[in-house]
Length: 252
Image (cartoon, rainbow, N blue to C red; front, side):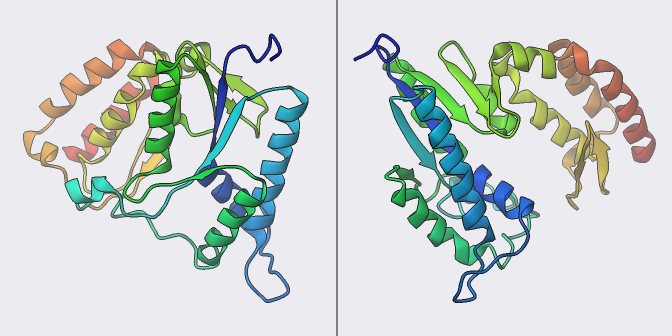
């Protein structure tokens, strides 16, 4: 074993992210049978490029692709409105899912999925177990939610930007530590759901039609959340304050 590989290094590829990225970046393509195949083509091209680059760089000792098994997870059992407003996958993408699974295995790569769990759940679980075993981990994804997992021995690789991301990236981008990132979407969502219409917050649009109970408590509901957000993420303070004023006007 070389000095480089004296320590195990696990690469976990966010396959679901690859699939949707490939689907949206390529025009509609079909195979000779008329079956949609654009996402399959784009996905395999991206996977091949990654495998080739990592082989040349003598990167991982272990690598696996992680996929979503289906749309229903344990969270739906806990809360029936979980992602209730998210549209289903495009019709021409659905028949490509089994082809993508076959293509992944044709690379002789493990294709990991588990009913009732999202790919993110599986990636987080494998990351935690690998770190506990003394391994290094690289998560191949551009999903900011997975940046919560960044820690000593764990980084992220965004292949579209050819960029490795560690704790410094999270601090610069969000103004906080990776472990604090879970608070950001929760606070933003709470603010969005305080009104009964789409609201632009932190650059994203929440299209939920639900009226959160927070509305009944009036403006006081924002105070604690905003203060906590600003204290944890000072870099976000200027933009957040302006957006909250706009939201307050809608509430009033």
